[in-house]
Length: 334
Image (cartoon, rainbow, N blue to C red):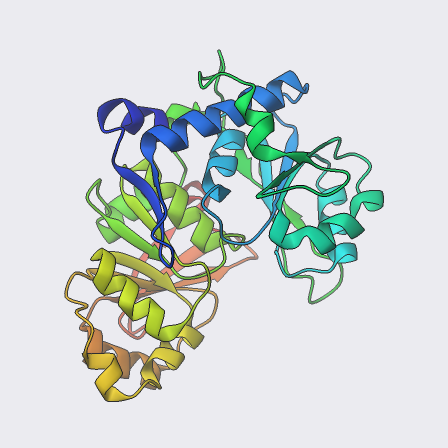
C-alpha cells in the first residue's frame, strides 16, 4: 500500500511527526503534496528511470519528496546533508539527477554546488530561496494534487560512504511493480518485526541513511506513523519514546552507548513500556552493551547485519546469539 490508500481511508491520521517541534503531516497532506511534486517532475519531462536527489536535513517535507519520486517510477538519491559542496555535487551529478531539492538551512553549500551540477535543471528549495533555486512550496502549489495517470514504483539509489574511494551508487533495476504495492521493506517489517497500521516508529537517525529511510517508507506503506527526530540526543530520544508511545525503533550501537551513559535517574524516569521492537544496524553491537540495554528495555532488541558482497541480510536476536532469519535479495535490505 502507499499514501493514497490511507489518505482515502484515514486522511487525518499522522503519517509522520517531527519529534522536537511536534509538527504533524497527515496522510492526506503527504499524499496531496507528493502528487503535486510528481506532477511537477512529469511536466519537467522526467520519466520512469530518471533521477531526483534530495540534499537536506530531517525535515517535515522530506518524505513527501521521496514518495513523489517513488510513485513516478524515478530513482531517488538521498544525499548526506553534512557533505561539502564538492562531495554533494559529485553524488548529484554521478546519479544523473535532473531534480534537486534542498533547504534554506543548507543554503551555503547549496549555492556553492550550483556550477557543478549541470544536469540538475530543476532546482527547488524549501523554507526560502537563494539565487539559482525556486521556492519548493510555490512551485508545487501550481500543480494538482491528483496522481499521475500511471504510477510505476520507483527505487532508492543510495551511495556508499566513499571510505575506499569515491562514493558508489547502488542502482538496482526497477521492480516493475506499481507504487500502490508499497515500498519493498514492508513485508519484512510486517513479518519479522510485527509492524502494523497501529505501529509508531521512532526514527532517531538522519533520513539519508538506508535503514532510517527504508524503515520510514515501509512504516507508511503499512499505514503506521513515523516519528522523526530532527537530530539524535539521548535524553530527547527517551522523551520521544514516552511522549509518542513509540512501538518500534531503529538505532545504531553508539546511540545505545550514549543512552546507557545517562544518569540512572534520567534513564528510569521515562516510560518506555510501549516499545515492542528495537532494531539496530550499521555495526555489530558489543555483547556487554546489549546485555545492559536488555536489562533496561527487556528482550526486544534485534540486530540487523548486512553482507554487501551477496546482498544478503542476517538478522540476530538479543546479542546476536541466535540467527533468526536469512533474507535474500527480494527483501530489499542492502
